[in-house]
Length: 294
Image (cartoon, rainbow, N blue to C red; front, side):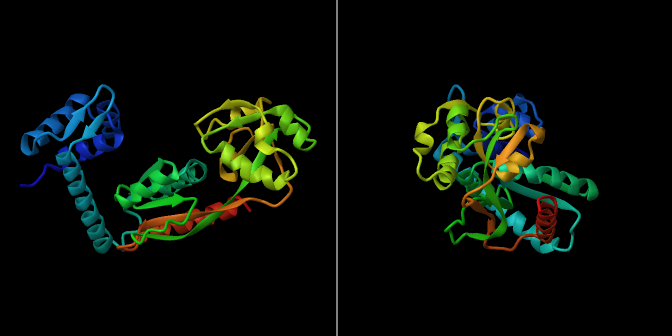
C-alpha cells in the first residue's frame, strides 16, 4: 500500500523535531493537521509514537517507518540527480553546517538564490555530529564538518580552512596573558576547548584556561561576541563567526604565536556524486569566501 507522502513527511519531521509544535511550524501546518496525519498513519501501521509531555519517542514500528521514509528519500534523490543533472538553476540545494561557517555561507546562498530564482535553498545550523547524521540519513545532500569522517558511506573533500581567533574588546589595551586574566572569558559550547587549544600555543608557560574566570556564556553563535563588544570579557572563536558580527569596530583580534587552523570538510553520501547544481553552488561559495576573506 502506498503511503501518503504528506503524512510521511509530517511523521519524519516529527521524528526529527521531537514535538508537534515545532513540526507544525516547520511544515507551515496547524498542529491539528500534523496530528491527523499521524493518526492516519497509525490507523494503517499501529502505534508509531510514545507520547511524553514535551516530546515523542518512536516505537519499533515508528523506527521502521522512518527508515522506509529515508529509503524513499535516498531513491528520490538518486533519481533526481540522474534525470536532472543538467538543470543547474532549478531544484533543491540542501546544506547543513556548524555555526561559524554557516554564518558566512547563508548570506552567500541567499545571494545565489536571488540570482537563480528556480533554486530552493535549505540550510540548517548543527554541530558536527548532527551534520554527519543529517547527511547519512539523506535529510540533507551536503554538510560541512570540522573533521574528516572515517565512514565508507561518506565522501569528503576539503572545503576551506578557518583559523581560531583570540578576540578582545577594541577599547581594552592588550598587554599579554595578564589582560586575559583581567577581562575574564565569555564562554560558548565549544569555548573552553577552542580557547585551550589556542592559548596553549600562545602562552605555553602560563596556567591557561584554569586560571581565567568565566564572565558569561551564550549558545547562540551570532550573540557570543555581543558581551565582548561591550567590554565584558574576551573569547575565542573561528574566524567566520567573528567576521559575521555586525560591529567589527568594537572588537580587536590579537595575532601572534603559532596559529590554530582547522580544515573544514564538505561531505556527502558516497553512493552517488553530488548533483551538478550542488557542485556548482559549492564552487561559487568557495570563490566568494576566497574573494571576501583574502
